Length: 230
Image (cartoon, rainbow, N blue to C red; front, side, top):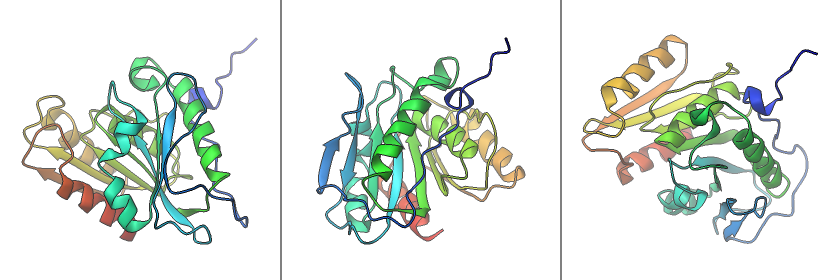
């Protein structure tokens, strides 16, 4: 019998925003997803979100050893200001599956988290982004490129690599990196990735900054402003 990979093992996300419906929404604030035992995830709903208006969405992916709660901390103020719903799932292990050998369990969980969210919120498909820092940025690039039919934008802060199993669509890409990064040195990472993406035809907004392995507030603001207007 021939073994066929599952959609999750192919890095494919099937959840999509609902069309022509008005989900019930969710109260403002931070809420657990209650989709997994132990490691789960959160959704952050700004006070500024209006149920009758499609909201921008950012799927936020944490770095190694992190959590969904930590992944949204730097963006909460900006999300509140601009009415962006933040979805922060936890990886099934200490980091994302593709960094541990291949796609599968994390893709399945992210797909379930997105389906959960799309059933509760009206999301703007033209402003549905995937964002991440460090290992989360590598995963955001990889999943975002493979699921360009879902994600309109990719925001990658200090990625180490990318391993998309396929290419779909042409999501716009914001890429940033600190020139003094000693965790994921810029010469081996973003300075290598940005030209590859540009040569592949992607619209890449690339920014370097004087700093280490972090997301400075000014870079986060620049990325969110780009996401909302690009």
